[in-house]
Length: 111
Image 1: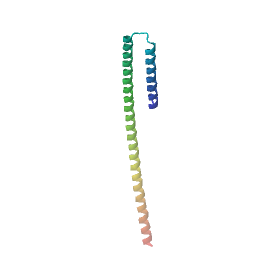
Image 2: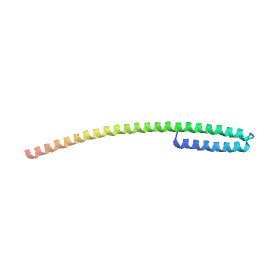
Image 3: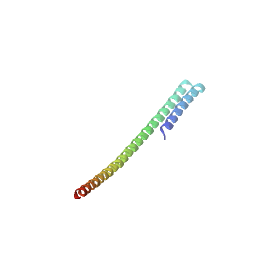
Image 4: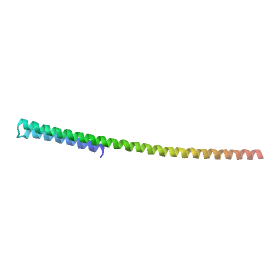
C-alpha cells in the first residue's frame, strides 16, 4: 500500500466518522445518557481502529527499513566487486604498459 493511499484512507475515515457523529447527535431519538454511551462506544471503536492503523503503519515502516537495508547491502556488494575488478584491470594495464616500455628501451638501446 502506498503512503498516499494510506493517508487518503485515513482522511476519508475521519471525515466519515465526524459526519456520522454529527448526524447521530442531530437525529438521535435516544436520551442523553444513552447517546453519551453510544458516543463513548464509538470513540472506543475509533481509538481501537487508530491503534490498529498505527500498528499497520509501524509494520510497513519496518518492512521498508528492511528492504532499504537489503538494497544498500546489495549495492555495496556490487560496487565492491566492480572496484576489485577495476583494480585488477588497472594492475593488468600497468603491467602491460611496463612491459611495452621495457621492450621499447631494449629495442632502442639494442640498435
